[in-house]
Image 1 (cartoon, helix red, strand yellow):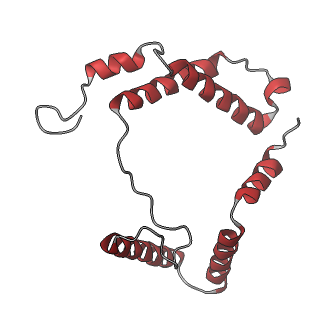
Image 2 (cartoon, rainbow, N blue to C red; image 1 turned 180 degrees about the vertical axis):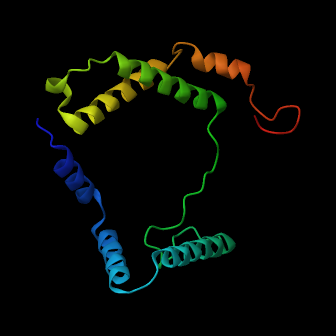
Length: 159
């Protein structure tokens, strides 16, 4: 399978996009382009609208997104990941770096040429690093978890 970076990726993103949301965003951008309004002022106004909508929604405790919001309610973090998970992801990142440096430099026939080849190689290294970090990994996560116990320290600050 031959992959051309720009057209394939751009078209895949466009195909995955919601057509209604795409048309609404295009209409907003066209309206901004045709008017002589300041971009920064427009962005500040949109941020204000989003904050007001979020405050209104949290005050009324509605479970459905408001009808005026294109993308629905803002995402809120419900719970933080366990500290072991954070250390495992860090170990996966370190392993990704190791694996990426071990992959062959001249591998155009495997990964492709130019930027697309670099992206594919990076994605492979990321997945290999994540798989290596699963289970016991190489011990980086275990050592970090032992060195930094969960919860706030004696001063009351999280660390």
